[in-house]
Image (cartoon, rainbow over all chains, first blue to last red; front, side, top):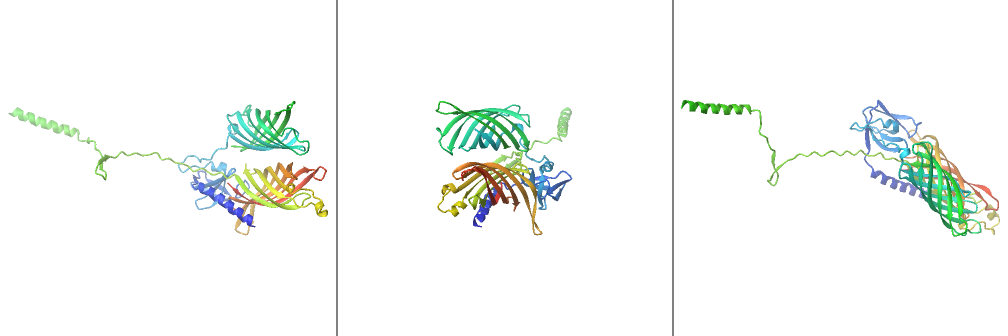
Length: 244
Length: 223
């Protein structure tokens, strides 16, 4: 019971710090005949209050596509994003509801996925920054889990997106460099435990919904080593990402 | 004499006439104020543009917290597990989640029956995992407590991949889970989850898939 209590107190302290940072709330005027307020942030939650035209509502915060608002007499409820976008500021300007990031021109991306690296299962996570609409820099951290060894791989590279204006499917190609570290599971131990590598990649990406997207990638690695034969590896992976 | 008087009168009449024509005009006035030091100064009214800042709406789509529970490690009994989790809510239906946890395996049945046999060293009994999951809120709704209280809740399913480190070896693991999230307040959520971590193990000499089921209770905060 004690760790649970400590956790509640810790979370409360963390939350109240954040709450103090932003005390002013946005106030909006209802311009449509009415504004429906639901009991929860979801399509199925019942309407518990209806704000009238010309009423001033306070927007407290948002969660996904829903906004928690407070009516003048204190009733609170959740308003759908599309409904809130029809309200105005007290000055009459349209409500400043931030638009979703445009998929074809987004800047940041964070994702994770599954793949196969040198016939081993691969868990991958990556971050991506768009330098232009079609060129982006990607940073990847991944772990390959095989029966003979376990590898940690990190890479940095550049990727070009052909036809970034195609929303649902656009092909990509890239190249980059990285490191792998091998942790052997069964003898004999590998001759070299860590190597630098270079890769070329071919892939595709597409939009799913709101801030969600998918990526598929095939990579061909050349492992630099001090042996007579250079090692070549292949990898493919499929991942999902959130973009900002 | 008469002509001189006439010209004087005419001049006076002209002057009066001119002043009549200028009757509507007013001399420009200057507002002169005395300031406290006694120095006169000219007030130049300056109206600054009002800088209106509309407050931003805070998005609270992230969820962070910790959990504890019981993890049943196949062949090694049920043991306490402690973990942390971070989630991002993409839409009202979908969320992505990452978590990591720690547990320590107990004695296997073999070791209990034959105490002289040791299957795993002390460090080999450490069971740690991390997972990357996608979750779907299947049954969103409300939970009622008495007459006057309702808490938003959701029953969700999760699926993901990750790594389990057990017996000093990393294993690729799949995980399936079902959980309930109850929002005690808008920012505090109580979670109850049941998850299975499945991976291939050959600890006892044969390759087999082992199921490691855990039941956990957690608290998270939205930010």
